[in-house]
Image (cartoon, rainbow, N blue to C red; front, side, top):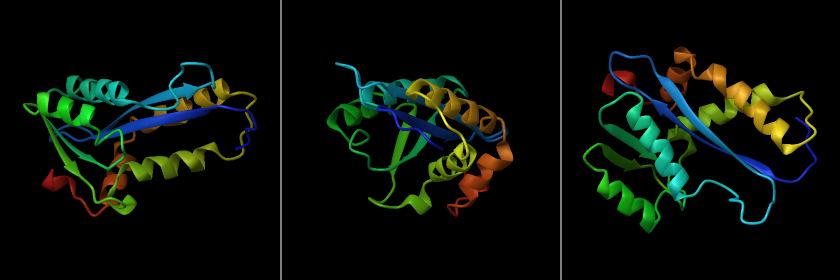
Length: 157
């Protein structure tokens, strides 16, 4: 993938599993154009919105397995999680454990789907990323494979 411009695209994603339903992917992208007062990446409010959307989609409680990204463990996020503990339980991964994080499979698959493309600007890159993530949302076997690669089994969930 070739892109020489400035800016970046940030992605946040959740693999969602609910007994009796297909596994699905919820994601959000954020494009940073290097403009004044524009967020460079996902902040606590964006993560809160993503988690709220995940909660609304399947309904019911969420058990979230999360890494220790600074925004994930900030005081703001801890306070928000505590306020929503009636539907949200958070389990932290060890400090560096990409092999235990099913989202790593998403990023690996996405990288292979972005090779051999050239884009002219950051918005085209964001569109390309979304166009490659969208079909993954409906590939339950692929998503289950990302979970299985961590050693987790869907039977335990």
